Amino acid sequence: MIDPGFRYAHLHGLSSGSRSRKGLWLAARFAAAGVPLALPELNVPSFAQLTLSGALAVLDDLDQPARAARSRWRLSGSSMGGYLAALWAAANPDRVERLVLLCPAFGLGDGLARRLGPDAVTRWRQEGSLSLAGPDGQPASLHHQFLEDARRHPPFPTVCCPTLILHGLQDDVVPLQSSREYAATDPRVRLVELPDDHLLLRSLPRIGEELEGFYAGSE
Image 1: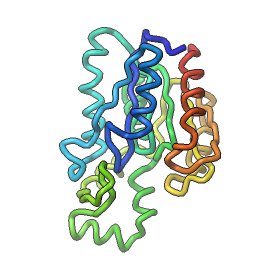
Image 2: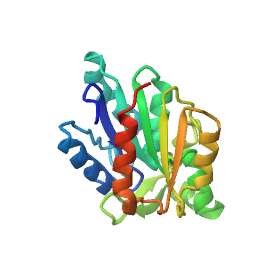
Image 3: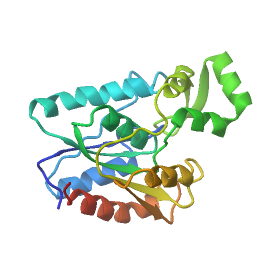
Image 4: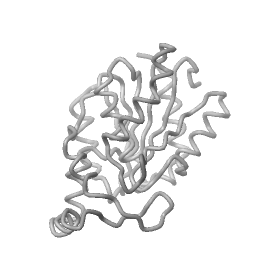
């Protein structure tokens, strides 16, 4: 059972948005339990001008009513959203009670640079923008400030709450090894490896079960 005494939010990944398939699926599952799940839009002021710092500010704004009501958060997030959830929890240890991270993109700035390769990163800097799949699946431009800003954040934020990581064994976007190393450093972190790829769409029922079981626990 999902404890209604907490606030819940799911954070989408890069090239995604608040209407992501996983987010909507989880929101429907939460709604069936009578608990709202916030799905904040992190592409602010737009996907083209997205930064991690801007997305973290969205979470600060989302937290204001919860803080006023003295409610704490249980956050989940996918890829970039998982990394953002960990960053925000590390910066606000009194505000987050539990984390569920789906293929979290720890060290997103350097990881993206490695994935693109040095030549593409140089072109991105020189041209000022990079064409990626946007939230609607169509090509969209992302400014170079995204990479510069991402590299300013700690690659492996230390959080002070119980954390569940679900990561696909066939993930070819975010290395599974990063989650293995993160889990090995902290006994509060539990890693579940799933027979799936980065999107984890085949594992949605398992994710729902793991998430609800984890949220049913207490510190």
